[in-house]
Image (cartoon, rainbow, N blue to C red; front, side, top):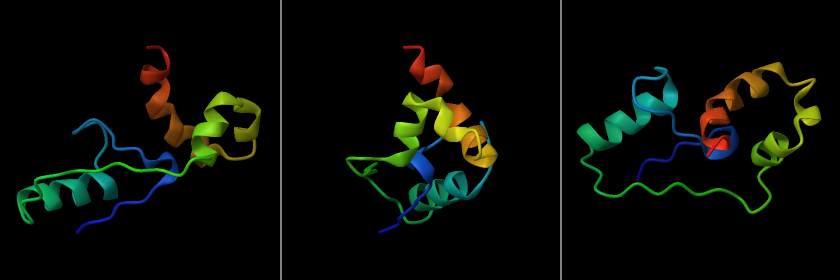
Length: 76
């Protein structure tokens, strides 16, 4: 089992940004030969709540930048 945890439980599009989540997922698939990927999050996820109430991100520039990856999905 391989567990990745980050704000909002985001998994970015492969190649969009190389980082810990991308590397961990790549390793789990290529080396550990993971067949199933589960993405789970808490019922009251603070990151997703902040996306709905942007004022909560004013003093959190790193979280705000990280959650910008969700902008495309928010348009759907």
